[in-house]
Length: 410
Image (cartoon, rainbow, N blue to C red; front, side):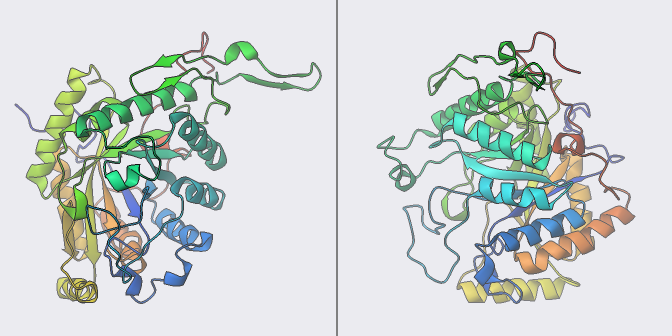
């Protein structure tokens, strides 16, 4: 049996361009990145810092950026806040940050992280729909689950975390409610006819009447249908606490059944191939084999002009942190040409793209946009200009018709 998925579902043929995204998290993914030259730690909680980072990513023609978020302070401990004062603690709200950056950008997709476990899908649906309107069709959403008890105590809805499988079942319901709410307005529901005094056609707003184990939502939304119809929904495979690998099976199911893009945390091409195969089987079992799904490998990168320089920089960061950096996914240390080789090798596992985590944002994001991207362009595997105005367009995803519309607008 072939180890590579059919091209109609997982677009990974060598003749097609790679998709690239960058995961933005504070000063970078290494805990000592804020101490690097150029890190701008005094600006981490300003709009300008995030606008500059996204502008750099857009200059590199990347498909999208993701914004990390959580419901508790960053911690190296599985039991709660670790009390450390030598590492970045605190974040801005990811959705609000993306909305602030949206008017300052034109092409790149904006994908904030939202935790489904302790948030209401009605609120998230209108927040992401608003982001899609503000960005004119470039919004996405990264759904994650929360299992630590100390995060649950911030909300008081539950005394103990849900079991792993049930957390992902709840996330699947969360996504289904969001999708239905986005469709609860027909595309042409707004009339805005001053002469007749009719602003809206009430017959083109629909109750979704969702009844599930975790949510009961009638609808409709209060926000008109997003420009993309359905903003891009993404999710990542599970990671354990403190950077240890987690059980990906429940997350694989969520990716296979509910998302447009999945991020997989693997160590090598064989791991990627196994994950792609498992997700493909789950998608086939759900009857969704004909619908496109992008799978991106997550990869933390430390880049420099030569491999020894990259190793030395990572070692210097490790010394500042007092420990060797570890991650739930592969860590690449080397040159942009070597990274390009790795990406082209891994894509044969059935991947259509990669979400790169810059070890130190000030250094590694420009290395991606000004070093890796030109290298991939020289190899003919990355775009030289943005070819679409929406995130769905960049990913080759069609704009879906509203499920409730009797006569969907063209």
